[in-house]
Length: 312
Image 1 (tube, rainbow, N blue to C red):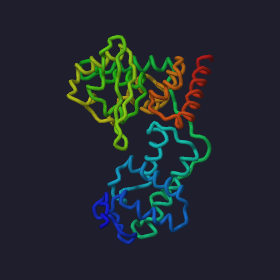
Image 2 (image 1 turned 45 degrees about the horizontal axis):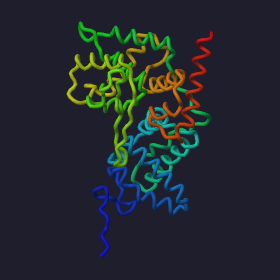
Image 3 (image 1 turned 60 degrees about the vertical axis):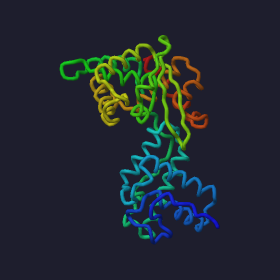
Image 4 (image 1 turned 120 degrees about the horizontal axis):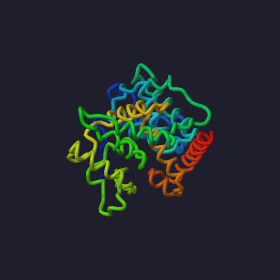
């Protein structure tokens, strides 16, 4: 007797007519795969399209009802994929992922599951992705002074300075900052404190250790004494952390919006300019060798831009 594998989703549709606007996004994948096969798409194309949809599921949750997707949501996903995910995305890959979205949501509309195609208005891009903004050494000094001057009531607020120094030294992503716990900071070696970045991918636990300065660890201790975190380091949402960065940038007269993305590229460029080996920077950022090829080229361009500004 052949045992039937249990579906991942409750009430998973058996055919396209069963898909409704409330059907979970991930529950449509098998029927979409069958549709692509019937259309004569190659196994390579089908695999790539489904991988792109799984990435959208990573961003928004596979359980999200298909009716919840809007053009704005999809554009936010594409922006995250290109700038916030921390993995380099080539122009070719970006274009294919836009195509995957357009083919998928057009299919949902065609079978009557949706009355509106949210991907229709999503625009393809041509040409190389623009470089991120980065802070110059003078910008860094101004931002640190601004962060040090921020208040919590009548007291000095240690959170802005700690957040800024943390991102400047580590270049971690917003999601990684939000997951940091008390166990992730280690000063067993007083001369070389560490911060551990831990996460789980496809049931595989990954961990990387990033060396930080005693100065940053001291800022961490001051922050901890003021905010008394129980487990997770930051006692506010990552959205609030974004607001804090924006506030620091405005107070320091930074000519662009300060964000996690800017801090990540600033940290990597800073390390490159300090003479760190490229493999060390790649591992610190948590990138694969394939992703590093395009990322390293951008870091070198950003470094050259800073050199030009300082030479003026």
